[in-house]
Length: 634
Image (spheres, rainbow, N blue to C red):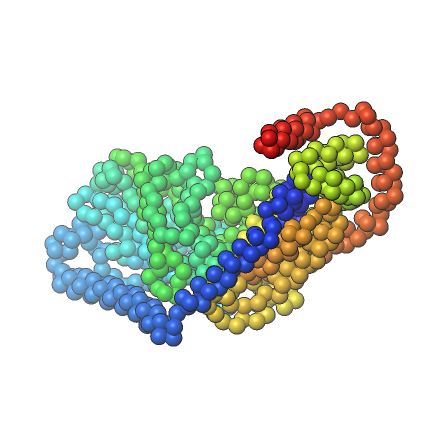
């Protein structure tokens, strides 16, 4: 397995020489000066102690303003509630006034809020009679990083209601106290009466699983409902579930799926508002490892609006708002069927929903997604079916993948060995044509042809491994199975394995981070060893290319320092297995036999080698270049 930053372009014969030509002494001096200028710039422009105090004061002021705004919002909300309560009390004994405010629903405008629970072995719902809405959802099998219950919905920062126009009255469902008319072990029925007509909410849950069905039924209200229909408002402040708030915030957003299309999403990194232009099958409030999804059996109508915003509470990560236009039949009683999914982002579980919900897990596009779905995940699930230690599962997954790729590695090694055996002759060609790069390439290509060696043979097999490398890079950080699973010193394989958190330091925090990940260090060290082995085995690698190949793993050290321990552990194992494979292959490959094969090929092709089109073009380029130089001298 090649390293993520190394595609082994150095095995392509033209590229090392081209880069070597560019990377002369002046280039190194230029790079050094640029580096010194950058260091000087950061040093000169680093904030003074006074600036740091002012920046902290500014940040604190912004935070205080946010807190004040939140407090004002809460105060206003309480004032509205008190105002409404005072009005309600004032009209309590005035049925005409009460009816003027709420129409036929006036009898349920006042009451006492109570909660009813609906649960199975996996999920527990709290449903309030005020609005007959789901106010809280707890996943019973999971804990947050701080070992608190996982609450996907929290009544403190949740708006969940329907709004429609019934006659001359604007109805907002959470302004009324619905009557619980029926209760069983797995279902609840609430009713809001309007004289001889009514609206019902029917919630149903199975004995296990994360699905909750809801039917919104209207009876006798066909002539009263406005043709504009019924809108469902579902606005939720996402609670922090994981350790790294920035990572969880970056991976939280709204997904949606148009009918007969693949799931899409709105921006994860910035606040955005989007109006859906087509009928929509479902909308998902997706967090890093959990999601709340609302599906309409008859599809939400076009014109639904989705929005991401800053959270109301500074303890939460993001606010997700949805205004969904429910399927509606004008002039008829309604029976709107919704299905909620409250659960983990586990690929197999989401795939079983059979609605394309598995697409909220970022497995990569095109070939990378196919490799994950049809190779990586099946192998992982097979190992997971009889093993409980995820460190061992990653080890076995690595061994299986590396074994499958062994023929490519073997072929690549043989091609590299042949190129190394031709190096003395390539050096002679280089010395003979040291002032004519084009002629060097022409004679090198002729030598490859005569010796029966493919100069790309060492590179192409390695390039074929790249899709697997990228697929693993996509799969591991998104795999729910690694969440809160420990191995060796890593207490959670889904985040970085910090062995030392030294805090935020200027520049260092931006480049490297505020901690030391041991698996990342091991991965980097093993990559440097792997790079040295390749440089020793590969012919024609100049010193400049060697320095670049050693520099790349070090540059990526800060990048991977923030990634999941499971990923860097996998890459470390991959390098170790590669060392072992190359050692075994070197023992197995007989270089004397390769020399004999090259000699035999040369004997057969002496004087009879046909020129390839590529070789012919190189020779023409060389001749044209020589003619140009001669004319220039004249």
